[in-house]
Image 1 (cartoon, chains in turn blue, orange):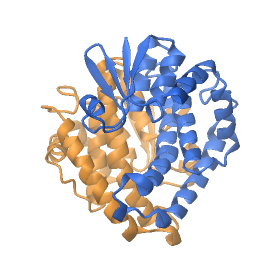
Image 2 (cartoon, rainbow over the protein chains, first blue to last red; image 1 turned 90 degrees about the horizontal axis):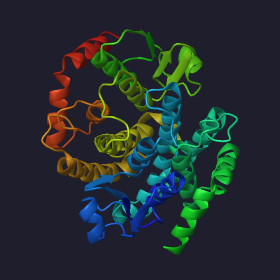
Image 3 (cartoon, rainbow over the protein chains, first blue to last red; image 1 turned 135 degrees about the vertical axis):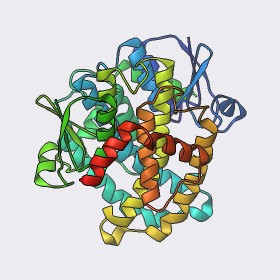
Image 4 (cartoon, helix red, strand yellow; image 1 turned 180 degrees about the vertical axis):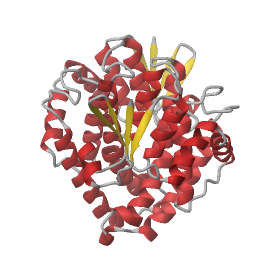
Length: 200
Length: 200
């Protein structure tokens, strides 16, 4: 049994979605970031955490990849060329999409108010994202997923990053990314996870 | 046979170090970023790339993890709790150390000059790194490596990030990180890789 610790409205959703894709039993402890319960699981207070037997795992990407490898789904085999390509797309999403989303978040609500430079950083973020969308468009193949026929961890993380950018008013200007999100949100596992998120 | 494509003075060093740790045969094509040869391997022009048989892999972290899993060293087993913890430390280094190093780089030489806001972002980066060093110090165990007795991909990436921060005049103010770097650079494989880097 897995216990997802964290509010499904934040990055915990990545883990929730993976659990629904895998069809494994789990329960949710809907802790808010920085709550006493969240800090008991992760001293930094960040969500999500996953309780596995008597161990606590943290970091949404590490947890989703752990679940994928443990259950032999959502991923190519470790050490294969296909996995290296899957991982390079995963890191592209983390570096280029999540990185920009985090920069916007830091200067909107994470940093103490005196350190926020939202106007100063805006054009740099836009320049970065424009290049990232072009690179993404050039890299993706015929689909339907980033790794071809197999839906993987890279798809989950990329789609979640695109959704976060949209919420930060940076709607992705990238046809390949928009199409990926449209296909992904039609998956039954996404729909189930999203219903849980909406109700949270 | 592996062919490392890229100048060992940049992120290609991560792959070079891993190849030396694993003791596998390889050759180097010392392409500069954005050279015609580098763009032939990776259309974005970024280093490193790795040629494996007739395949080209990109992204330093994806390549190092690929090599580790392929040769059964420098990593815990995929799907294990130990691997999830290794991966969460790897992502910590990427999010919190590499992320800050990249922010400094973007505003120093990556962005077009008109978009650089080096003075505006400096205090935010310092605030971020101060928190990251405290979190890192609290997370690391008794060592000698991040995953205990086993030297892993997480150590290679964390040490390389720390060195890059030092070069960007952000010498890590974190005893645990300083000690990790000191132990790592004493490894024979690091020494061999560093000699190749110095001569490049």
